[in-house]
Length: 436
Image (spheres, one colour):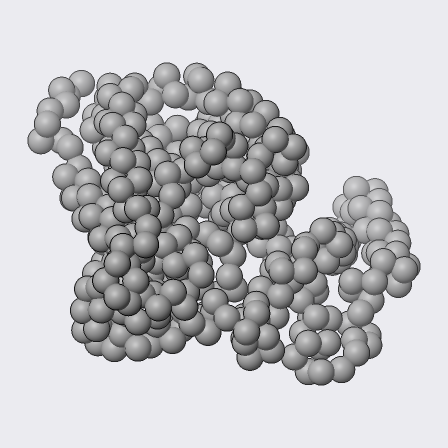
């Protein structure tokens, strides 16, 4: 066994993370500046404190033998499930979601830390069953590990954070050798659920007419009949496949189950989403529907990004942020401020740094000799990728507004600590790639 040394440390991954931390602190500072040059917020001071304490957490994670984390993963997962369970009852409501636990200004967002515990426990389960992931019952049990926190987070309700868990499961399951048709089924069901839920709203709000045939996807009185028909078809095809071993019965079961799950999911989405969450989808399709209300954030964000041009207006010279046109500008729309003040080049720098993190993460997956480390790393890479794509896409107007923060840049202790703990795990795997 080779001995590890300081030279085995991934300084490239660490360097990219530290630069992003510095950029984040700079623009949290900028977001609190008024057009007169007065500092309206001390958020940058808190961000500095969270960054310093987060780096200590990251260091602690690096020093821990990750095999011990695997043994403790079920306890981490159980503890976070309990926290998620009580959050809707004792949590503090922020931006329409009761997702914070704390006293006064001090608190945490359990759904952020639950991402880590879910990744750790899911990786432990999938490592334990090995090739058993190709069996449908074991695949579904792995899915249940992710569905439980998703359901509890949706009760808060925080749809944006809940969505992050889906790519985590898909990528970890893919790395673990799950059957492609199982993963395609889940992906197709999720996309079709969103489409069926949004189409009637699109017809009503964008086209400007009352929903006709499309309304059956969100009207329970109409939906119960075709859902019952789909259920009967699925049951008959299942009986035909297991009774007669005919392949075409399997594909009838596959398609009918997909349609049944997607239609039922669309009904639940429309039933439990709040009005402001529905409007996020509507203004994504056309922000001019409600330019002074739900569409305001998106319009101002796109304006800020576009006005930055190639080189930007200069640090602390942005207008959209300093005139306070951007709500949640230090959190959800931090990239908009950066793009306005540093322009295309600043955005390119951020993309390059996140690309380094993702590529180093993928390399760690490739060289990891421990299957558990490989699966945990896959979950972390999927989480980082989804956060970057959705947050930056949201700022540029090519993704719906979901409230997902941009790791290391957005203001907030929970997301910052979560990101740094995950970087600590990746550095841990790289440091011990030849054995602990």
